[in-house]
Amino acid sequence: MEIPAIRESWGIDKDTTFDDFSSEVYAAKFKFVSGSPGYVGDLFILQGSYLTGDAPFVLRRGETGKLVFVE
Image (cartoon, rainbow, N blue to C red; front, side, top):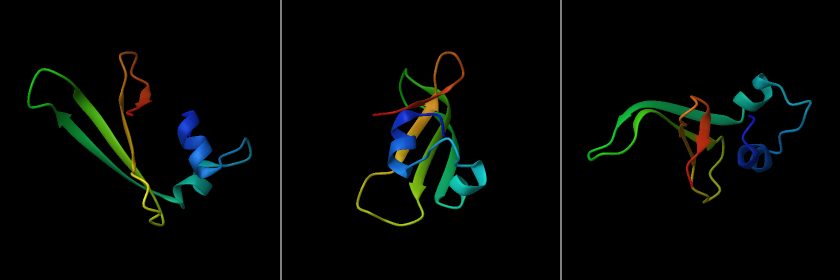
């Protein structure tokens, strides 16, 4: 909920709780291993509770362990 692109997409403000957000999103977590040298670790896919035609959000762990938006 702290990633600006997600905040903007879901209209999250300072009063939005995790329960509010979780009722509007589906999430899947994968233990991802790249087929070539590259990323290995947690990969998350977030999709809204309704289909808009927009691609889902993809997040991975950055070097500091925080989630980062994959563009």
